[in-house]
Length: 271
Image 1 (cartoon, rainbow, N blue to C red):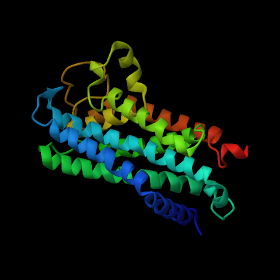
Image 2 (spheres, one colour; image 1 turned 120 degrees about the horizontal axis):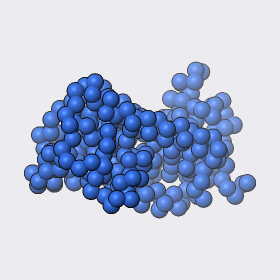
Image 3 (cartoon, rainbow, N blue to C red; image 1 turned 180 degrees about the horizontal axis):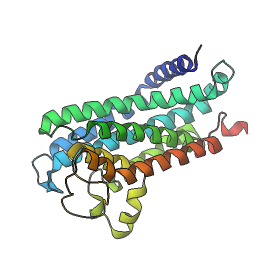
């Protein structure tokens, strides 16, 4: 079997296991999508943010929030399967380590990627948002975000003591990033110290890229500046997003290194 077929087999296995834990699966599938749609639609027509209807401004930001839940899906799955010795048994098969981890990452990402599609389509129809200004940049931001969040989750999973506590640790962090990454409010409205930190969080670059690509304005060059961002053309939108793209790639590289250093195939109790 080729590496791709082995990875596909791992992906299908991970999906089967994922949906067997219905409570966990529905939390990861419905909570971020429902919250994102409800908040974006409810704020439609209630003022403006940076020159846009509040609902229209929030919609692309919540695409970043939905992608952030890849961390929730992957990190909880990885910690749980490590504790249940699933990984230890899989390593005794013909599956290479890279196929196991890639299949896990793809399984944890596919739900969020489908949610992004539903969010943007349903949200656009509900609030009459404009069509994406730069679809290619939009796709790039979504894919880079999914890769970075998947790698980050795999790297962090090895630092968690057990699968039982992973949810309690990860969920508050995700919700905190929602408030500090430009998802629900501009970074320029955060306290001064937070403005210096927020652009370098892993979720902020995704939000900046997606919002710039969708609305055709420069939300990425300096997100700490208040006011209506300058309009950008297709080439200008790529230039505006050069820094957040670089930050995302840096997070992906750091997360990959963390995975090599900290990821554990066996429970901690096994030493």
